[in-house]
Length: 205
Image (spheres, rainbow, N blue to C red):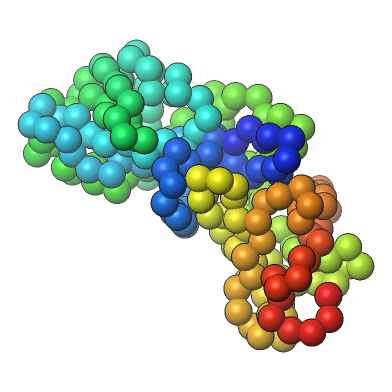
């Protein structure tokens, strides 16, 4: 999944950022060679429409005629119609024509093949590239491992599983802001951060 960056933020992405203002933790395994662009929240109405939480910056992913892959089985479905609605999309798939059929896809993720992904900006990264990086301070002190990314509606937050003795062994929450995330080196497998006061529950850095 990816998202585009803004000058004052360093974003990691899905194919894009969440369009809701709720915290949402994405911990589902993404099938190899694919990217998640949305999640089905449930059925809407009686004719098979579904409510979709967008996880992409590109609304065109939900345009009529577009094909998406549903769930881990990667079932191909064509969008017959879609419309924005209260921060989400109401999507009608051509293959889903009843509420009963729509309800079968509750909480399923929507995917695209990686080769169909949009170009990333220089300061944007795939979520699956960020997850697994070693978080460290500018002085190379190891903080732990990035295990997930929260999408808050304002900026992403990296969840760091701490190294032994760090942060009283509690998860670290690192906002994906340029003043905090100083560099991301995918090749070296590191995420270098500048800890601001109050981020770490211990004395020192």
